[in-house]
Image 1 (cartoon, rainbow, N blue to C red):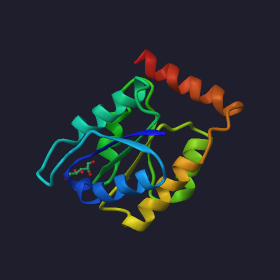
Image 2 (cartoon, helix red, strand yellow):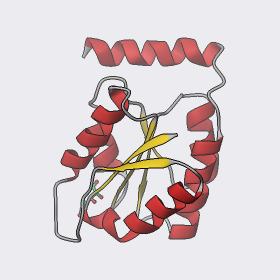
Image 3 (cartoon, rainbow, N blue to C red):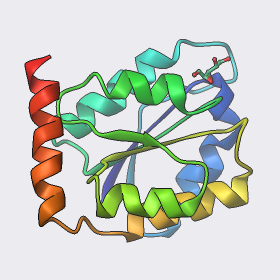
Length: 147
Ligand code: RB5
């Protein structure tokens, strides 16, 4: 899959390891930054990844900030984006299976790197189940479209 990656300065410490992990799993990664430890504004990177996924240029997105919140909230303002913050693998898997989440966010100040790998793997390895969940996802998307 083609995966959009973005982080702010708080997520930067995990950036290279997470991108390498994604590549080792056979994914293509489009890196939207940030590219250094200097303080930056997380909405910039949430928007870049959100637009890439929302426009269909990338299949899924991975975002990291301090908590995962600011950067995921920013991505969620982009049409077609369903971004979730996960701190463990179970919710990451269900976010794909039930909610058809297309952007995974987590906090570098919340989860260790090994837990981050497990969260990412659970998210990427799961498939949307459709059925009754598709109706609910369509309802969410309609809410977003209507603003
Ligand atoms: C940056 O200090 C921090 O506020 C940011 O990474 C994130 O945690 C915000 O939600």
